[in-house]
Length: 367
Image (cartoon, rainbow, N blue to C red; front, side, top):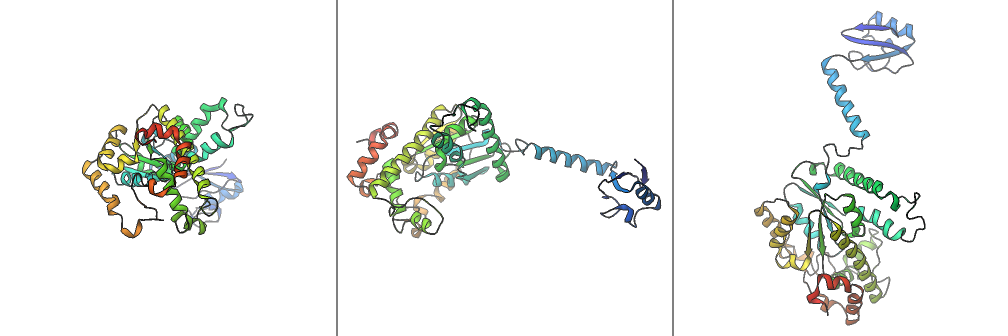
Protein backbone atom coordinates (compact mmCIF):
# COMPACT_ATOMS: atom_id res chain seq x y z
CA UNK A 1 0.00 0.00 0.00
CA UNK A 2 1.73 3.30 -1.09
CA UNK A 3 2.16 5.92 1.62
CA UNK A 4 2.52 9.68 1.04
CA UNK A 5 3.13 12.35 3.71
CA UNK A 6 1.32 15.63 3.14
CA UNK A 7 1.07 18.54 5.64
CA UNK A 8 1.63 16.33 8.68
CA UNK A 9 -1.04 13.83 7.71
CA UNK A 10 -0.39 10.29 6.53
CA UNK A 11 -2.29 9.31 3.38
CA UNK A 12 -2.51 5.66 2.44
CA UNK A 13 -3.57 4.65 -1.04
CA UNK A 14 -5.67 1.55 -1.36
CA UNK A 15 -7.44 0.26 -4.42
CA UNK A 16 -11.21 0.39 -4.12
CA UNK A 17 -11.09 2.05 -0.69
CA UNK A 18 -13.52 4.87 0.14
CA UNK A 19 -12.14 8.35 0.48
CA UNK A 20 -12.05 10.17 3.84
CA UNK A 21 -10.56 13.57 2.86
CA UNK A 22 -11.58 15.29 6.11
CA UNK A 23 -8.52 17.45 6.60
CA UNK A 24 -7.32 19.83 3.89
CA UNK A 25 -9.00 18.45 0.78
CA UNK A 26 -12.68 18.57 -0.10
CA UNK A 27 -14.94 15.49 0.07
CA UNK A 28 -14.47 13.22 -2.89
CA UNK A 29 -11.49 11.56 -4.51
CA UNK A 30 -8.29 13.40 -3.71
CA UNK A 31 -6.92 12.49 -7.10
CA UNK A 32 -9.38 14.98 -8.57
CA UNK A 33 -8.79 17.66 -5.97
CA UNK A 34 -6.79 20.76 -6.75
CA UNK A 35 -5.77 20.91 -3.08
CA UNK A 36 -3.62 17.76 -3.31
CA UNK A 37 0.02 17.93 -4.41
CA UNK A 38 1.30 16.35 -7.60
CA UNK A 39 3.03 13.61 -5.60
CA UNK A 40 -0.18 12.71 -3.82
CA UNK A 41 -2.23 12.72 -7.04
CA UNK A 42 0.37 10.46 -8.66
CA UNK A 43 0.22 8.07 -5.71
CA UNK A 44 -3.54 7.89 -5.96
CA UNK A 45 -3.44 7.42 -9.70
CA UNK A 46 -0.84 4.68 -9.49
CA UNK A 47 -2.88 2.85 -6.87
CA UNK A 48 -6.09 3.21 -8.94
CA UNK A 49 -7.93 3.83 -5.74
CA UNK A 50 -8.80 6.53 -3.30
CA UNK A 51 -7.27 7.82 -0.12
CA UNK A 52 -7.69 6.87 3.56
CA UNK A 53 -6.56 9.51 6.02
CA UNK A 54 -4.92 8.37 9.24
CA UNK A 55 -5.20 11.17 11.77
CA UNK A 56 -2.39 11.45 14.23
CA UNK A 57 -2.73 15.05 15.33
CA UNK A 58 -3.94 15.49 18.91
CA UNK A 59 -7.25 17.12 17.98
CA UNK A 60 -8.06 14.40 15.51
CA UNK A 61 -7.25 11.70 18.05
CA UNK A 62 -9.70 13.19 20.53
CA UNK A 63 -12.48 13.15 17.91
CA UNK A 64 -11.77 9.53 17.06
CA UNK A 65 -11.85 8.49 20.71
CA UNK A 66 -15.12 10.33 21.31
CA UNK A 67 -16.78 8.81 18.27
CA UNK A 68 -15.56 5.37 19.26
CA UNK A 69 -17.13 5.77 22.70
CA UNK A 70 -20.42 6.85 21.17
CA UNK A 71 -20.43 3.87 18.83
CA UNK A 72 -19.75 1.55 21.77
CA UNK A 73 -22.62 3.14 23.66
CA UNK A 74 -24.97 2.60 20.73
CA UNK A 75 -23.90 -1.03 20.46
CA UNK A 76 -24.88 -1.50 24.08
CA UNK A 77 -28.30 -0.05 23.37
CA UNK A 78 -27.67 3.04 25.50
CA UNK A 79 -28.45 0.92 28.55
CA UNK A 80 -27.05 1.99 31.89
CA UNK A 81 -24.55 4.43 30.39
CA UNK A 82 -25.41 7.71 32.08
CA UNK A 83 -28.96 6.36 31.99
CA UNK A 84 -31.84 5.85 34.37
CA UNK A 85 -31.24 3.20 36.99
CA UNK A 86 -33.84 0.80 38.29
CA UNK A 87 -33.72 2.40 41.74
CA UNK A 88 -34.80 5.72 40.21
CA UNK A 89 -38.08 4.31 38.91
CA UNK A 90 -41.28 4.79 40.94
CA UNK A 91 -44.28 2.77 39.77
CA UNK A 92 -47.87 3.89 40.33
CA UNK A 93 -50.02 0.77 39.98
CA UNK A 94 -53.77 1.24 40.16
CA UNK A 95 -56.70 1.04 37.79
CA UNK A 96 -58.54 3.68 35.80
CA UNK A 97 -60.53 6.26 37.81
CA UNK A 98 -58.57 5.80 41.04
CA UNK A 99 -56.90 9.23 41.08
CA UNK A 100 -53.56 8.31 39.50
CA UNK A 101 -53.66 11.37 37.23
CA UNK A 102 -54.08 13.62 40.26
CA UNK A 103 -51.31 11.87 42.18
CA UNK A 104 -48.98 11.95 39.18
CA UNK A 105 -49.62 15.67 38.62
CA UNK A 106 -48.61 16.50 42.20
CA UNK A 107 -45.45 14.39 41.96
CA UNK A 108 -44.59 16.00 38.62
CA UNK A 109 -44.35 19.36 40.39
CA UNK A 110 -41.47 18.16 42.56
CA UNK A 111 -37.90 19.04 41.62
CA UNK A 112 -36.02 16.15 40.05
CA UNK A 113 -39.16 14.11 39.32
CA UNK A 114 -40.57 13.37 35.88
CA UNK A 115 -43.77 11.48 35.11
CA UNK A 116 -44.10 8.90 32.35
CA UNK A 117 -47.84 8.83 31.65
CA UNK A 118 -49.24 5.41 30.87
CA UNK A 119 -46.59 3.72 28.71
CA UNK A 120 -48.69 0.51 28.93
CA UNK A 121 -45.52 -1.55 29.33
CA UNK A 122 -47.34 -3.57 31.98
CA UNK A 123 -50.10 -4.38 29.50
CA UNK A 124 -47.50 -5.28 26.86
CA UNK A 125 -46.13 -8.12 28.96
CA UNK A 126 -48.97 -8.75 31.41
CA UNK A 127 -51.73 -9.26 28.86
CA UNK A 128 -49.55 -11.77 27.04
CA UNK A 129 -48.38 -13.63 30.14
CA UNK A 130 -51.54 -13.66 32.24
CA UNK A 131 -54.27 -13.64 29.58
CA UNK A 132 -53.16 -14.60 26.09
CA UNK A 133 -50.84 -17.44 27.18
CA UNK A 134 -52.83 -18.53 30.23
CA UNK A 135 -53.66 -21.93 28.75
CA UNK A 136 -50.68 -22.26 26.44
CA UNK A 137 -49.56 -25.89 26.24
CA UNK A 138 -45.86 -25.03 25.86
CA UNK A 139 -45.92 -22.33 28.55
CA UNK A 140 -42.85 -23.80 30.24
CA UNK A 141 -40.99 -24.73 27.07
CA UNK A 142 -38.48 -22.90 24.93
CA UNK A 143 -40.85 -21.78 22.19
CA UNK A 144 -43.03 -19.34 24.16
CA UNK A 145 -41.10 -16.07 24.47
CA UNK A 146 -41.98 -15.76 28.18
CA UNK A 147 -41.54 -19.45 28.91
CA UNK A 148 -41.19 -20.18 32.61
CA UNK A 149 -37.96 -22.12 32.14
CA UNK A 150 -36.31 -18.97 30.78
CA UNK A 151 -37.77 -16.53 33.32
CA UNK A 152 -34.44 -15.06 34.48
CA UNK A 153 -33.45 -14.35 30.90
CA UNK A 154 -36.62 -12.58 29.81
CA UNK A 155 -36.96 -10.67 33.08
CA UNK A 156 -33.52 -9.22 32.38
CA UNK A 157 -34.69 -8.36 28.85
CA UNK A 158 -37.77 -6.58 30.25
CA UNK A 159 -35.55 -4.63 32.62
CA UNK A 160 -33.18 -3.55 29.84
CA UNK A 161 -36.05 -2.66 27.52
CA UNK A 162 -37.77 -0.42 30.09
CA UNK A 163 -34.60 1.37 31.21
CA UNK A 164 -33.43 1.93 27.63
CA UNK A 165 -36.74 3.45 26.58
CA UNK A 166 -37.05 5.47 29.78
CA UNK A 167 -33.57 6.96 29.28
CA UNK A 168 -34.25 7.91 25.66
CA UNK A 169 -37.52 9.63 26.56
CA UNK A 170 -36.58 11.16 29.92
CA UNK A 171 -32.81 11.81 29.97
CA UNK A 172 -33.42 14.48 32.60
CA UNK A 173 -34.43 11.73 35.03
CA UNK A 174 -30.95 10.17 34.95
CA UNK A 175 -28.46 10.81 37.69
CA UNK A 176 -28.54 10.94 41.48
CA UNK A 177 -31.59 12.40 43.26
CA UNK A 178 -33.70 12.22 40.09
CA UNK A 179 -36.72 9.96 39.72
CA UNK A 180 -39.00 8.76 36.97
CA UNK A 181 -42.58 8.20 38.16
CA UNK A 182 -44.31 5.70 35.88
CA UNK A 183 -48.09 6.10 36.03
CA UNK A 184 -49.43 2.74 34.90
CA UNK A 185 -53.12 2.31 35.85
CA UNK A 186 -54.03 0.50 32.65
CA UNK A 187 -50.95 -1.72 32.74
CA UNK A 188 -51.23 -2.97 36.30
CA UNK A 189 -51.97 -6.50 35.12
CA UNK A 190 -48.22 -6.76 34.44
CA UNK A 191 -47.15 -5.33 37.80
CA UNK A 192 -45.75 -8.63 39.18
CA UNK A 193 -43.50 -9.02 36.13
CA UNK A 194 -42.30 -5.41 36.22
CA UNK A 195 -41.29 -5.38 39.88
CA UNK A 196 -39.68 -8.81 39.51
CA UNK A 197 -37.62 -7.44 36.63
CA UNK A 198 -36.75 -4.28 38.61
CA UNK A 199 -36.56 -5.23 42.30
CA UNK A 200 -34.69 -2.02 43.16
CA UNK A 201 -37.56 0.15 41.94
CA UNK A 202 -40.08 1.84 44.22
CA UNK A 203 -43.82 1.15 44.13
CA UNK A 204 -47.06 2.94 44.97
CA UNK A 205 -50.23 0.83 45.16
CA UNK A 206 -53.14 3.25 44.73
CA UNK A 207 -56.62 1.89 45.46
CA UNK A 208 -60.11 3.33 45.50
CA UNK A 209 -63.47 1.90 46.52
CA UNK A 210 -64.50 -0.23 43.50
CA UNK A 211 -68.08 0.99 43.75
CA UNK A 212 -66.93 4.58 43.18
CA UNK A 213 -64.59 3.41 40.40
CA UNK A 214 -67.47 1.69 38.58
CA UNK A 215 -69.77 4.67 39.08
CA UNK A 216 -67.13 7.03 37.67
CA UNK A 217 -66.53 4.75 34.68
CA UNK A 218 -70.26 4.60 33.93
CA UNK A 219 -70.51 8.39 33.98
CA UNK A 220 -67.55 8.73 31.60
CA UNK A 221 -69.02 6.27 29.09
CA UNK A 222 -72.59 7.52 29.03
CA UNK A 223 -73.65 9.47 25.98
CA UNK A 224 -72.12 12.89 26.37
CA UNK A 225 -69.43 11.67 28.78
CA UNK A 226 -65.79 12.43 28.08
CA UNK A 227 -64.84 8.85 27.15
CA UNK A 228 -67.97 8.43 25.04
CA UNK A 229 -67.05 11.57 23.11
CA UNK A 230 -63.42 10.45 22.73
CA UNK A 231 -64.53 7.11 21.35
CA UNK A 232 -66.84 8.75 18.82
CA UNK A 233 -63.93 10.93 17.68
CA UNK A 234 -61.94 7.79 16.95
CA UNK A 235 -59.55 8.29 19.86
CA UNK A 236 -60.59 5.17 21.75
CA UNK A 237 -62.18 1.80 21.15
CA UNK A 238 -63.55 1.13 24.61
CA UNK A 239 -67.08 0.04 25.26
CA UNK A 240 -69.67 2.67 26.14
CA UNK A 241 -73.02 2.26 27.81
CA UNK A 242 -74.64 2.36 24.38
CA UNK A 243 -72.90 -0.93 23.49
CA UNK A 244 -74.33 -3.01 26.30
CA UNK A 245 -76.79 -2.95 29.18
CA UNK A 246 -75.79 -0.93 32.26
CA UNK A 247 -75.66 -4.01 34.48
CA UNK A 248 -73.49 -5.89 31.98
CA UNK A 249 -71.15 -2.90 31.88
CA UNK A 250 -70.98 -2.92 35.68
CA UNK A 251 -69.99 -6.60 35.67
CA UNK A 252 -67.33 -5.98 33.05
CA UNK A 253 -65.86 -2.99 34.86
CA UNK A 254 -65.91 -4.68 38.28
CA UNK A 255 -64.15 -7.72 36.80
CA UNK A 256 -61.50 -5.46 35.26
CA UNK A 257 -60.97 -3.79 38.64
CA UNK A 258 -60.58 -7.17 40.31
CA UNK A 259 -58.02 -8.33 37.78
CA UNK A 260 -55.86 -5.21 37.76
CA UNK A 261 -55.90 -4.46 41.48
CA UNK A 262 -55.38 -8.13 42.36
CA UNK A 263 -52.24 -8.22 40.22
CA UNK A 264 -51.04 -4.91 41.61
CA UNK A 265 -51.62 -6.24 45.15
CA UNK A 266 -49.71 -9.42 44.25
CA UNK A 267 -46.79 -7.28 43.09
CA UNK A 268 -46.98 -5.15 46.23
CA UNK A 269 -46.85 -8.16 48.54
CA UNK A 270 -43.94 -9.73 46.65
CA UNK A 271 -41.90 -6.54 46.31
CA UNK A 272 -39.02 -6.32 48.80
CA UNK A 273 -38.11 -2.76 47.91
CA UNK A 274 -39.52 0.55 49.05
CA UNK A 275 -43.29 0.69 48.66
CA UNK A 276 -46.42 2.36 49.99
CA UNK A 277 -50.16 1.67 49.92
CA UNK A 278 -52.35 4.73 49.37
CA UNK A 279 -56.13 4.82 49.48
CA UNK A 280 -57.75 7.50 47.35
CA UNK A 281 -60.15 8.30 50.18
CA UNK A 282 -57.28 9.05 52.59
CA UNK A 283 -55.46 11.09 49.95
CA UNK A 284 -58.60 13.13 49.41
CA UNK A 285 -59.25 13.63 53.13
CA UNK A 286 -55.75 14.86 54.06
CA UNK A 287 -53.72 15.27 50.90
CA UNK A 288 -50.59 16.91 52.28
CA UNK A 289 -50.20 14.46 55.15
CA UNK A 290 -50.65 11.50 52.80
CA UNK A 291 -48.11 12.90 50.34
CA UNK A 292 -45.58 13.33 53.14
CA UNK A 293 -46.22 9.76 54.28
CA UNK A 294 -45.84 8.52 50.70
CA UNK A 295 -42.46 10.18 50.20
CA UNK A 296 -41.21 9.05 53.60
CA UNK A 297 -42.10 5.43 52.82
CA UNK A 298 -40.38 5.65 49.43
CA UNK A 299 -37.36 7.34 51.04
CA UNK A 300 -37.44 10.25 48.61
CA UNK A 301 -36.57 13.70 49.95
CA UNK A 302 -38.80 16.59 48.91
CA UNK A 303 -39.07 20.25 49.77
CA UNK A 304 -42.14 20.42 52.02
CA UNK A 305 -42.98 23.99 50.97
CA UNK A 306 -42.97 22.99 47.31
CA UNK A 307 -45.00 19.91 48.15
CA UNK A 308 -47.60 22.05 49.89
CA UNK A 309 -47.76 24.32 46.83
CA UNK A 310 -48.24 21.32 44.55
CA UNK A 311 -51.05 20.00 46.74
CA UNK A 312 -52.75 23.39 46.68
CA UNK A 313 -52.31 23.82 42.93
CA UNK A 314 -53.94 20.50 42.10
CA UNK A 315 -56.65 20.56 44.79
CA UNK A 316 -60.18 19.81 43.66
CA UNK A 317 -61.27 23.26 44.77
CA UNK A 318 -58.78 24.90 42.40
CA UNK A 319 -59.90 23.07 39.26
CA UNK A 320 -61.83 25.52 37.04
CA UNK A 321 -65.57 25.03 37.45
CA UNK A 322 -66.10 24.48 33.73
CA UNK A 323 -63.72 21.50 33.76
CA UNK A 324 -65.49 19.47 36.41
CA UNK A 325 -68.89 17.91 36.89
CA UNK A 326 -71.05 15.13 35.47
CA UNK A 327 -69.66 13.68 32.24
CA UNK A 328 -66.27 15.36 32.66
CA UNK A 329 -62.86 13.95 33.50
CA UNK A 330 -62.96 15.65 36.89
CA UNK A 331 -66.34 14.51 38.12
CA UNK A 332 -67.07 14.47 41.87
CA UNK A 333 -64.01 13.61 43.97
CA UNK A 334 -66.54 12.57 46.63
CA UNK A 335 -65.89 9.19 48.25
CA UNK A 336 -69.13 7.29 48.73
CA UNK A 337 -70.88 8.95 45.81
CA UNK A 338 -71.72 5.48 44.49
CA UNK A 339 -74.71 5.43 46.85
CA UNK A 340 -76.43 7.97 44.58
CA UNK A 341 -74.95 6.73 41.29
CA UNK A 342 -75.54 2.96 41.36
CA UNK A 343 -78.74 1.00 41.66
CA UNK A 344 -79.02 -1.55 44.50
CA UNK A 345 -78.58 -4.33 41.94
CA UNK A 346 -75.43 -2.73 40.57
CA UNK A 347 -74.02 -2.28 44.06
CA UNK A 348 -74.55 -5.99 44.75
CA UNK A 349 -72.84 -6.91 41.47
CA UNK A 350 -69.74 -4.88 42.31
CA UNK A 351 -69.58 -6.10 45.89
CA UNK A 352 -69.90 -9.74 44.87
CA UNK A 353 -67.18 -9.55 42.20
CA UNK A 354 -64.71 -7.45 44.20
CA UNK A 355 -65.47 -8.95 47.63
CA UNK A 356 -61.86 -10.05 48.38
CA UNK A 357 -60.49 -6.56 47.69
CA UNK A 358 -63.29 -4.77 49.53
CA UNK A 359 -62.57 -6.90 52.58
CA UNK A 360 -58.84 -6.22 52.28
CA UNK A 361 -58.88 -2.47 51.68
CA UNK A 362 -62.30 -1.29 52.91
CA UNK A 363 -63.37 -3.53 55.79
CA UNK A 364 -65.20 -0.62 57.41
CA UNK A 365 -67.31 -0.12 54.26
CA UNK A 366 -68.11 -3.73 53.49
CA UNK A 367 -71.83 -4.41 53.78
